[in-house]
Amino acid sequence: MAAIPVRERTRRDIVNEAIRLFGTKGYAATSLQDIASAVGCSKATVLYHFNGKPGVLASVLEPPTQQLAALVAEAATLPPAQAQEHAATAFIELSVQARGLITVLNEIIPILGEQPEFSGLLALGEQLLGLLAGTDDELELAMARYALNGMLAECRDPANRPDDELRLICRTAMSRLLPALS
Amino acid sequence: MAAIPVRERTRRDIVNEAIRLFGTKGYAATSLQDIASAVGCSKATVLYHFNGKPGVLASVLEPPTQQLAALVAEAATLPPAQAQEHAATAFIELSVQARGLITVLNEIIPILGEQPEFSGLLALGEQLLGLLAGTDDELELAMARYALNGMLAECRDPANRPDDELRLICRTAMSRLLPALS
DNA sequence: GTCTATACGAAGATAGAC
DNA sequence: GTCTATCTTCGTATAGAC
Image 1: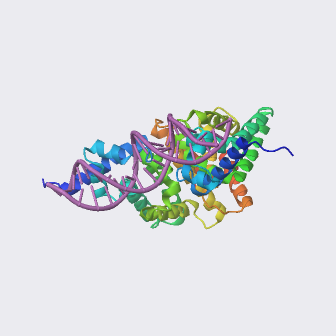
Image 2: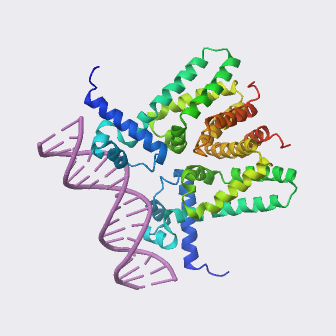
Image 3: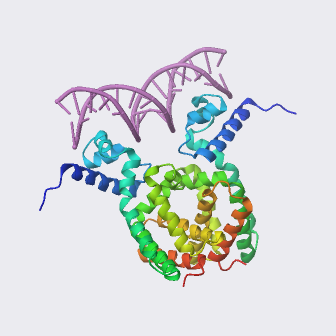
């Protein structure tokens, strides 16, 4: 097999440790020194590979962002009613599987709008809201936002809840908030 | 009229500026130096009057905490069905009126459990969940949590939305999530 | 009692040697 | 590409003037 370039190897190690630390201790409570120590390098090395702590965060959130983009893209190919159903089901699944990072997402929402690195994620969130609401009505869009934000919070609350229980709760709440859902 | 003691005057000034700054910039983004500069005193003076930055936050959150305590106490005197209705209506009103601080609350939720100064607020939140759910059923409790967390997030989202619009959204979401509500 | 001045450790970030 | 050294600012703590 081909050798992995040193550059990519170091970057990957940093991202992996950051995922682990952000998911357990949270974003704010994890220092660059924590990440550097876990990887076995210096703070300066982390900052050489990434554009500050937000840069590390952006790389950590990249995979789930890609998954969300795929979700939205696939829903766009469906007729409205099926698009709503697909968005709801797939987003619940995505959230349940990325629970650790959803906790991080909750933490950084207040600063999400300020960092241009996350404008893509914000835009995807807006598209998801439209898909879930299935209409342009302001009140229904608000219900979709309620559902999304409630889900983000629910993924955080009890850390060790069975996935199936979390799925049931999220699905029930979605069905109640969005009557058009089956 | 009686002269205000210097001690209380300084404390009040600090709390008022902290409320303003926390509400606009957020808790983490507001430094003790910011507060001290706004008041016109030194950092050390702030720390003389309050037990660190969390101490300032505790004083800032004290009025809404008292209001929440009053809400829960009054609901406890009512029969179950009316208690649920009262909890929902009064909590929506409390949240709408304290929007700026609700934003702060959202920000500090992850660290709320670690600071003993806020254990009272956490306990009140649990009691409120029980009142809203109106039952011990785990799923309905989760729906109440969903409603509460969605509301906290909704109070944050668009800063300059009319109060009445926010009330309607919160009320609609609560009614859908908690079918026992009228 | 009330406040100013000062100092400490840790954080994110940068500069420059190797 | 990685390091050490350094800078600034943060929260925090203490000594001492008034």
